[in-house]
Amino acid sequence: MPRAIWTGAISFGLVTVPVRLYSAVNRKTVRFNQLDAADNGRIAQKRVNPRTGEEVPYERVVKGYEIAPDSYVVITNEELDSLEPEKTRTIEIEDFVDLAEIDPIYYDHPYYLAPGPGGAKPYRLLLEAMRETNKVAIARVVIRSRESLVAIRPLGDALEMSTMLFADEVADPSRIEEMPDPDEVKTTEKELAIARQLVESLAGPFEPEKYHDEYREQVLALIERKAAGEEVVVQERPEEEPAEVPDLMAALQASLEAVRAETGEKATKPARRTTAAAPRQKAASKG
Image (cartoon, rainbow, N blue to C red):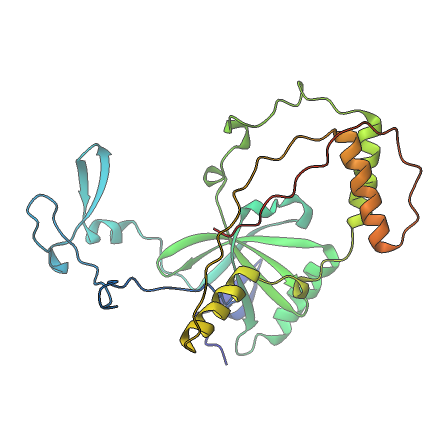
């Protein structure tokens, strides 16, 4: 049984909904320790002053913000404490917005909100009202001395709350030098029509259960084999060759026909083809 990491209440208008907060994810990253290859001894991390070479005890460690190379402003814990938001146990709803208006890039960490003592009925009322209006609540909450912007939405029979990034934390893609200028790159109606058909042929319901972290599964299998004493022979991977840029129209048509052949869908009359080499299959790699 998971333990609540925060208890408080949702407040909207004059209505208060007692709630408990639970993490909605259980990340399954494979973690490694750093060892000395000589004897497999675990390496200890130490705080060392590079000027003196001496280890610094924890009580002498202070926070510094670099304002220029090797120039810092030291900030004390007391100074930071004076700036902390008021410790409140209330999730203050400020707005209700349409779900489609929130770009997924703003979502950060998901949580579940469960009703607290005496909160079952107002919790259900809020959930059903948001579901019928297809609205998402935008609110602020203080968790562990940090104020967060959050989005609350119905998810099945539960309320899901995601912490959100602020607008100035999301990078503007136009600042990426490699992004093409839409006024300089033109597509034809024929290319777009086939691209739409390809997208529609690959479309289907989202089934999260069918996707697996294959790399993590392979790493765990490797660990099990080595733990059982099996000798693992590392196969040298072939060098990845740069793929040739194919004729776009030919590649689109070939992709569409391949998908339709897999699904048994009747293929359309192929468009005029040009003699372009098919793109080479890149060697799979896991970083």
